[in-house]
Amino acid sequence: MRVIVERVESYKDASKFVERVFEVFNPKFRYIKPNFLKHDSPENGCITHPELVKAVVGVAREHGVEPVVIEGGFYKNSASKCFVDFGLKDLVECRNLNREEFVEVDIGGEVLERVKVAETALDAKKEGYISIPKMKVHHLTKVTLGIKNNMGFLKKPAVYMHPKIHRKLVDLLGFMQPSLTIVDGIIGGTNSEMRPKPVKHGVLVAGDNVVAVDLIAARLMGFNLNEVEHIRNAMERFGVREEDIEVLSNPGIERLVRSDYRLSLGSKFLGRLGI
Image 1 (cartoon, rainbow, N blue to C red):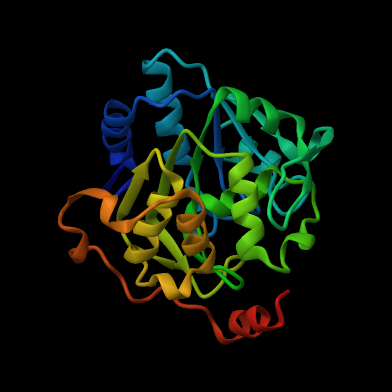
Image 2 (spheres, rainbow, N blue to C red):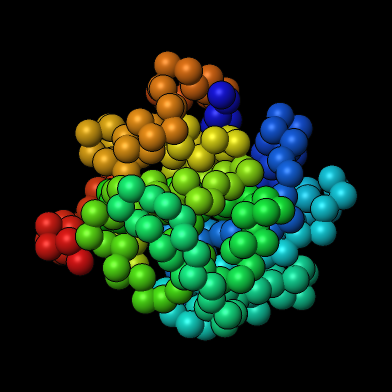
């Protein structure tokens, strides 16, 4: 399995990266799922940068796909505000998952047996979706990347996911897996997931195996497997071995690793409380 890693300093250059990723992986999809956790400046490191989403939309159209951008967000109208203010609604069909009807489905997980997901989530599962998570820290899972981006499909509030979250995320991944994952690390986020401090990392990571992508992205953030339990659990559940991952990196991955992705004291405290 392959993961592409490239230094990309500006979102103006994102399309070139996305074109290469499409050539290598030829993803089958209709939907695009960014991380619009809340309405915030794209420069703050909290949400997927809309210029990267636009780049994926553009390349998708070049490949004959008319995509639909979908997201829920932490607040009911977060996604809708992002769609309008960042120019996505005028560019492409957008759906706020928090405004849809929700369907309870049996996912047959080891810990998580049933979840309520937006109706469009079932279409995305069937027709395929590209996940575009933000590269940033999280107080419960250390990192929030592709695996955790699936939580945007769930009915809010989803605090029931917090106990045993490392196993529940893997259960959810067993139900829904993206066709392609592109991690936005041009501007990452440290300290916390809701009010991060931006990290000008200048990197994009992509692949068609979200577990492999998340592992490499976590490595780039300076984390090891002992620190990211949900990724380690996903590797065990789905048979992903680090030695089987071919990293196509320019420059070498060791030159792109950062050490400034760390949780603030407040975030660490919340993590210990499990809330």
